[in-house]
Amino acid sequence: MKLAAATTAFKRLPITGESGPVLLELDLAKGISESPPATPIEALRSMHTPMLRTVVAHLRRAEQDATVAGLIAHVGNTALTLAQSEELRAAIARFRTAGKFTVAQAETFGEMAPDNVGYHLACAFEQIWLQPSGAVGLFGFSAQGLYLREALDKLQIVPQLGQRHEYKSAADLFMRAEMSEPVREMMGRLVDSAMQVLLEDVAADRGLSADAVRSAATQAPIAAQQALETKLIDRIGYRDQAYAAARERVAGAQLKYVERYGSGRLEALTSTLNSMPTNKPTIGVVQASGPVVLGRGGNPPMPGRQVACDRVCAGLRAAGRDKHVAAVVLRIDSPGGSYVASDAIRREVIALQDKGIPVVASMASVAASGGYFIAMPARHVVANQGTVTGSIGVLGGKAVLAQALGRIGVKTGTVRSSRHADMFGTHRPFDDAELAMLDRWLDAVYEDFTGKAAHDRGMDVEDLRAVAKGRVWSGADALERGLVDQTGGLAVAVDQACKLAGVRREKADVRPIPKPNPFEQLVPAESSESAAVAAPWELRGPESTLAWLAEAVGLRMPGVLSLPVMQLPGLLPAR
Image 1: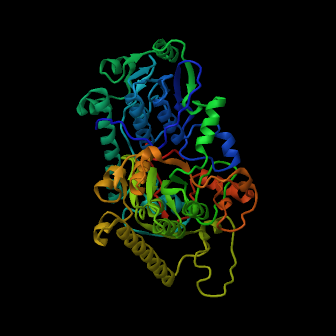
Image 2 (image 1 turned 90 degrees about the vertical axis):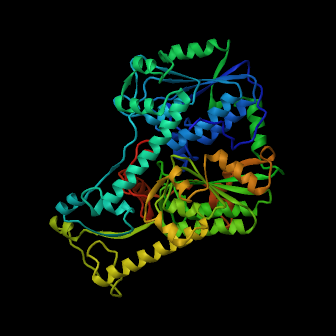
Image 3 (image 1 turned 30 degrees about the horizontal axis):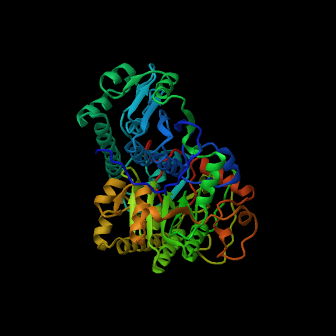
């Protein structure tokens, strides 16, 4: 697929005042963030990590600045997902169309390991430099599942889990000893779809045939000299040589990080003034990143973004009260979680649209299960080709620990007010009546999910169920099956929001909603309608630290609408 210049999600701001010509720099070795920090400590830890939307916005501004000559980027060994690469590629395409030069530099694209996404991004640049000792690790994509059943049997831990249906493989982690055939089929199609995007983009950008790129994937890692000879790169050289060559193209250029571009006093004032609410029509961006949870979430002192139901709903209500908001983009980067929380957020999306404010869902790297649940009622759903989405299904149950604990001398005593009061306790298995109750509940949730999805997407229920069953899809495949409306990033979603609102793109402000001031983040909320409810930061007690530790070792917070536990390097964000 030929890389096309994409429209952008951010307004053009006349930033001037840089002293002399500017060469922008993008260092992706520092990582990139999809959403703002979730806690004050995370804000300190990530203060030098640029946000994806900030990079895209500043490249947009730089397009119109005659003092900006070009861009040089450090792109090797990044932790980007394919979806993030797609969004950056679109921004770089626009930047190049404005007549700016671009250079990508890497020590290596993977050191005895794949770096498909880093190379995919590098191909969007006019020129690729690779260190002499480096290589192109264009191996292709893979997927792995983890299966604990045999280990649990040895520990005498008995999993009692149900799922709807065969592709909803989150329970397989505990219930199976190996990958099932339906899951193998699903994962195979997912990596094939990602590889197709990679092949088409690399072939178009490098002027190669798809067969040549596919052949390269069978020979990886490809040494620098061979990569040069096969036109996978343009120059061999170290970082200092790449930077020197870039500086030669614009004498006396000042080097400046993209995220710091326009950060001088005058420019900062201009940016601050322009970011303040105005009388212009506004496209509000409501962020939903992390597992979907009830309430305001439990923000630990370490990183841990959550789609906290109360916060996201408050943000959507705030958008509905703002007379300047013409449309909302719900930016989703979530593997799902709580069914009830997802349903509450879906209701707020519908309520906002009932007020005449269209909502466009913008899927980032992942919007699956509960993440898809909150996207599906939007007037228009946009996903990158490499987005991981779908997973319309449900799971639930428990693990019985009584035998395992008994082996080490731990016993429990129970009193209960009714027969099923301790149904979900780990000290005993479900009885037959409780297993039947669990099955009825899973069926009811699945019926509700698929019914609402069919309604929201304007599909026949049976057609929707054919692509449900817990199956995960790439954004490209989801488009073909009617689960999304368009492929593209946040920029495309904002353009569509403007179209639905009847607003000219260049006349619209784009800003996060809500954006409470620091005082609102510190004082208690007066009611559930207060802006402080949607504040992203809240200091919590030591129990939140334990929650973070559980998440860190892979024990995802409970939620029946959760993406299966899987390793998809280059597609899902690293945990």
